[in-house]
Length: 518
Ligand code: GLN
Image (cartoon, rainbow, N blue to C red; front, top):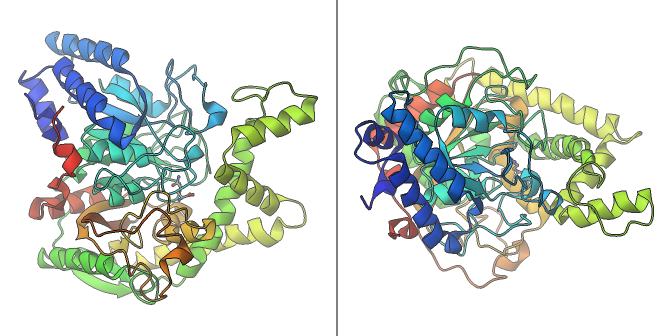
């Protein structure tokens, strides 16, 4: 078969179960595509061909012996933030360029136990800090829809791999949108689960109170299959929650859109920089959901303006603490010929960390330092609680909240926006992490508009860095919509999006490069 990469996860499980193809054929098919096409996309940091073929053979043997599970033999790509025993785990950093973990992350171990075949590790912004996948020591990943554009980040490699049909699904992590934003910019579906639903053990830490792993795939249905593998309590992660896990696949039709109350936050859609075409596509999708029986209710989320400052204190503060372990002594990069211990610390860290990571360590260390701690860090924690309460108040009257994922479609690689502008772009994703809520991003249309990027605040393109690598002629690019749910509502979110995807075909559109055959 030449079009195995077109098949959904359900179709893959059926094909494997009915012996239409073997795990080895499927794995060879994907490896061939990676070899031919990934040079243009740069999604993979490490391709584990040999190990993948061995896993595929083992999967086929297990199936012959009658011991296969549903997903036995289905390939996957892992974000390079999940530790993989015997295979490099770099987190996109020079600091970990040679790091080989002695153990598997729980998410990876669960994947292996489910019979998933690891194709390789995919690119990301360094230590998951960024929104473009350009902050990677390894390489810059392109958006499969337009190779001159960003795939988003930090899980840009995961998104690009799936959008170019170089993996049927992938793991991602989301500290402030890193699953949802690249999913939106690459036309995919991505779920950020409730904090504590997926184990963080072996997932390299950025901001521990916000970090959460989740699935990235072409549809809610495909995400549900991966959630069934990833979710669950883990004794090795004290913040993972001991709570029964749903069967996300079996529940795909459990929540009816009929009667679903969808909150539309005024503060998200009006009076703020949001590309008019993105807003238009989102409103079309909401009208579609309305025609399927949902009720649209305007709501207030008064804390919206506090999201960015709060996140950009708490996340860097936790990062500065988490990243203090990389000191050139225990593991990771070590500078050449240190003069003394201080020199070893200083040079190992300044040579091993990239610019954005250093910026955040500085911000976070400042916010945590004596004299500033109460004014910044403690204050941010109080505001964080208010943001959470704002959501909980909204959920008293509605079931889910609709939100944009991004303020515009994917911008150009090399645009190099000023840090504060990139940070401001996170407005629609970071509150969910501060509150610990689940949210799903999914495709709801295409748009070309780039020029009126900030329609309410007209600027010259160069003011925000556009145009540095040539003009942006219009290309049809995916637009994402986000649904935010109450705690533990992953089944509901997947189910609502699944029904939307039964009625629409945005999620079945493929980037031109995905149509190429290997
Ligand atoms: N853009 C966010 C940041 O740079 C995304 C972080 C994430 O979710 N890993 O912090």
